[in-house]
Length: 417
Image 1 (cartoon, helix red, strand yellow):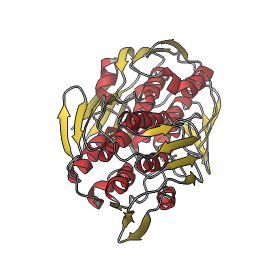
Image 2 (cartoon, rainbow, N blue to C red; image 1 turned 90 degrees about the horizontal axis):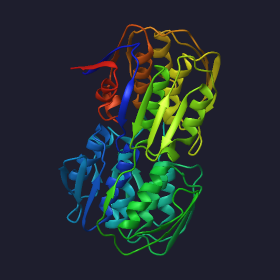
Image 3 (cartoon, rainbow, N blue to C red; image 1 turned 120 degrees about the horizontal axis):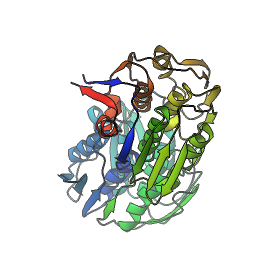
Image 4 (cartoon, one colour; image 1 turned 90 degrees about the vertical axis):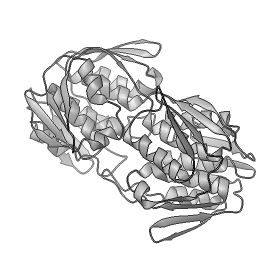
């Protein structure tokens, strides 16, 4: 099992290129199941979750061609399978995104229940309730979702709470439904708008993506499309925090500043400065950072996927910070590892109180989930001495070559096989 070793205390300097967004790539890749012609996607991040979904599409019968420069061609014209097996789904919860496309195109889908995960349960009942309103008959047995529908029919759907994958699944299913579908209280994340742009290029009729009300006029079929995936806003935010915790100046290229407004506003509160120019952001930070409070919530509020990284930052800020996690019920597992490195953090329910310390010390630590692993990398960059991070397969799920990118900026970081 690979590990990452970091000798902290080094200043960062230079430019880093942001990869395509994993959370946009996954639904867009599964959307190819709706098309009868070839789709071509570029700026696909080379991360483990993308590899998993490509294996899943191949297992269903799609032809997958990996090209140079992070591009892939998908031909789903001969897909005949409708079952997403447990061995693939269990490794990645986003595999549930094949449910809507398979049901819409083939009238049948059998997808393994993804179960819980390290940061929370994330139940799929909102997906299933919406599909039932579209006319699907759904049974749960032997750990599988078995969905059938001769023809989905447009309807009005009100989601109990905004759900990103639920919004995406229902949006894809409704593309081939008969008549108009209106989905209210939808998630507003930029990745949903990216998916809608792809579907519209394929011939769908979607309005309102990126707002809390999406209207879809069903069509008979979708064609292929060429599309470039949006940049990863979480990766960009993570590198912003890397500059902040090391008191450095770096330039972040190929990013989308309007997707990072909330993160940048909070970093400004802490004393970080930014200069924006088109798709580039220069981040400048001093060692003396101010304590701030954050509360996670759905977009456009502060993203839960940046909470762990900010906690590493706040561990070194002057004063006391408060972090309130409202999205997932179990997303403070990185705290104990940060405490091993000298952080002063106390947890009560969904709230963490962080009293800034003058320094962190390198230590052997263990990653528990994707964003927690990123927080430990950031803490290791700022800490005195050597930090050894185990279970970095979590990191590989969502960050493309992060140790190489950080090393190019001057970090002393190495992957140990």
